[in-house]
Length: 192
Ligand code: GDP
Image (cartoon, rainbow, N blue to C red):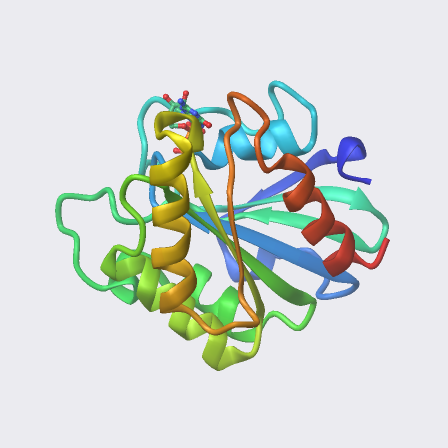
């Protein structure tokens, strides 16, 4: 399913959102967390999501179509702007509204660099998703930057911080470590 992902649309106004039908899974993370690399690896397409060299620039939702009733949604990276502050302020109304109201949104994947997990904005997003009742899967990215011992330490630290229903895994777009686990989560959420 994921291998058939095609770019559908970039949306920067509520009015432009595709119809609220079917199933959507959104992917979020701090700028530079490795979101583009993960999307490209997950969908086995080298140029599906552009790996940006100017993080924090985009303020739009990017929709990828998997099939007629399933979409992946790439949310803009947060936390990069010098202004910093609360996630709510950083992510403007469109993303807030999307996350609050979108009926077809069933799950949220939150990426965190394995070397710097659980920044305040990550925690804010995780807690909000839990309160909204979204399924949540946390991915600790760039695992290849750490040895196995340190990877496990980071995993346990995050595991202990979140509800037991939340999925937590390590991942490396470079080595492919954790890809099968992520694919299994997607298959489960998308019901395939
Ligand atoms: P985004 O801003 O979240 O979309 O992040 P990118 O996918 O553009 O990645 C940010 C930087 O981290 C780039 O320099 C990537 O090459 C690097 N990167 C992403 N994933 C990995 C990974 O799994 N391992 C390593 N070593 N570097 C990665």
